[in-house]
Length: 196
Image (cartoon, one colour):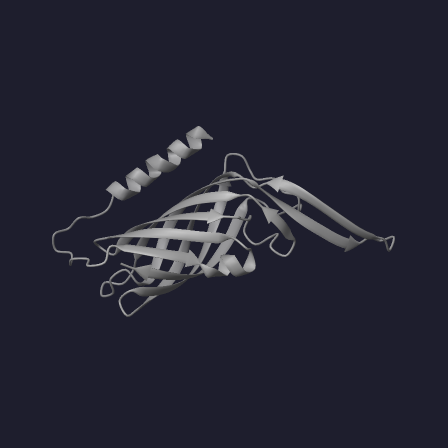
């Protein structure tokens, strides 16, 4: 686990040092943004807080912490409890040459997660018996992926963005109690933020 954390911090350092400090870039008045993924809160019960540091050349470093995390949305309807926590780092690249850190953007990302979730599985068997089974499984691991999004900025301080991303587990795969989830984890976001 320590080697995975070290790899994450090394990757963050490389991404942060790769930014372009061109003197011709316009001055960025507001360099920070705090956001939260409201879709995760409603669909999966996960609480997310993220910080985005805005750099010149329409790029930014985005760090997010998610509590009560889940493995995508595969088990959202059956989720009973989660103690999983994840740390995600992304490097946002905005496509617009006229808009300052909003509009369409792309980001490569790394995520490290630890913890497990407990699900309740209720069903009627072929013998017409009712079964109420709950079980826990580990969703920890190191993941890499990418995402696309679009951000709108209102009154030069409030942001609303819609994102979609795919992650793939690297190294140890998460447990797969559902039989066939694989190692690809989709996630979507409706994020509300404040720029300062």
